[in-house]
Image (cartoon, rainbow, N blue to C red; front, side, top):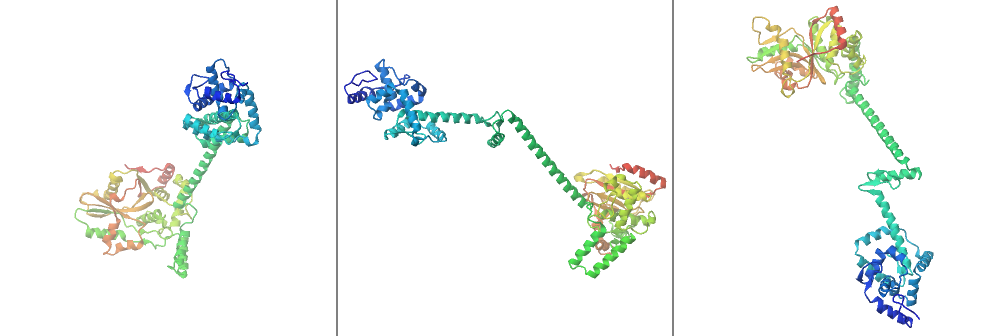
Amino acid sequence: MPFCEICSEVLESDSDMRTHLLLSHLENEMSCPFCSLSGVSYDDLHFHICTAHKETDSQHSVVPSATGNARRKASGHHALCLKNGATASNAGTALTQGATSREEASRTAVAAPSRTKKPLRHAPNFLGRQAQEEPSKHHKSKQQHLSSKKGFTCPMCTLVCADCFILQEHVELHLQDQAECEDLYTKVLVGNRYECPLCSVTCVDSSSLQEHVELHLEYGPTASEGDSCRDLRLARKLQEEEEQKRKAEGSRQEAEDFKQLQRQFGLDNGGGYRRQMERSLERAVSQGRLTPADFHRKRVEMMESLASGMDDGRTQTTGLLAVVYEFYQREACAGTHVWLCADTDHYSTSAGDRGWGCGYRNFQMLLSSLQRMDLTSHLGSIPSIPQVQALIEAAWAEGVDPQGASHFSGRLQGTRAWIGATEIYAVLTAHQVRARIFDFHQPTGPSGTHPKLFEWVKNYFSLPSSRGSRLPPRVVKTTLPPIYLQHQGHSRSIVGVEQRRNGSMCLLLLDPGSSPAEMRKLLTQNAASASITHMRKFPGHLKHRQYQMVLVEGLLSPEEKQIRILNSKTLHAERIP
């Protein structure tokens, strides 16, 4: 006869056993057989045992039946079988042979092809949902789903189990794998940094971690302690490659800048005066401004001038200082004083030296005045620009200004190189002309002006005329040569200074950039006033940071010349102030 394993009551038939279990145990108060939890529904008690006493449940498959209360507690754990239609005898068998039944059921579930376990990638999503839902609500929906079918469906995959114990062990496998995944994620993510799961290296972001792990995969699983050293070597290699790339880029940029400077200063082997003049004539022919016959005629004239070494005079304007003197005699206001240099011709830049020939043209202006004083009569007529380049090279060959010679590699002919105050000093010294260089190295007035430069020029021109006892006239034409004035990018010639009644001063400058047609307007009385205005430069017009002047003071003896050549090895300008 069947008997109840929970309360040991003997019954007459299986139907009586089912009725007994339903009335005496299932409908009574449910309590946990492993802790003090009681007064809950069957669904809540089943969820509690499956989650809180998973390990304890597997160790106590057979519950002793010492007291009825203990039997009632055990019935809560195994009532799931009765809820799904298990008979009393089946329930007894489940209680006495729980462990064996679960092992056989597990083998049966594994052997069944239709019950193959799904990949574990479903586990994280299930855990995320399970953590967000309330336990009782989730368990009730799950229990209703299980009660509606003959089999037991896994809530984490599509596997269907024939027994609840098989389902329990199957779900435990899901939970175990999910715990391992969470341990792996916890190991990878440490705070806000990423730790390699294969070694102790910590990366700052996920991309760095990915590259690091790929190194592990590339070098194989044997790389352990050497990974850090290998990463360090790789980092050093990448840094060295980046440094080499940066140096190469810097060298390329430096070379490009140097080439640009060479082009700017005419040292790029692009040809000199002759080649530039020929290209200018060719452009004029192509644009229709010059006929082929005129092209060949002008080219022949240029070749003859270059062969003679003398300037062709096409850009020369003579008699300017005489016209300026007459203008001030006629138009100067009361209280205005003007001091002018000796007669000087104006030389304009031409198509052959446009953009770089200002220094050569100012030297020609200075020579035009020195020749009238018989200081450079041995040079003959005014030399052409290529001939001036040859004179400077000859001065370098004598030993004048070796530093300047090294700057140009001792070569000027055939180039478009700019020259400055030191080159003018070198060629004058080589021809026994006493010259001095003065350096106004910084502004001496507001807004970057140079009032001391203006005062110095006024003293230079006015001092000889003020030595007598008589008052000097308002307009003075001296016997002094013009002053070579150099600043960054350009040079001009100072031919006089004007001081007005209120003490303000302006310099009178001849600019090589002015065209011959513009300068010849001075020779006409009607346009003289406008041309003089163009020559005036007030302190606000000269605001470059630094200016240099070349001043001619007479001739040198052979001994003085040699001393100056020796001293030019460390050539320095006289700084004012």
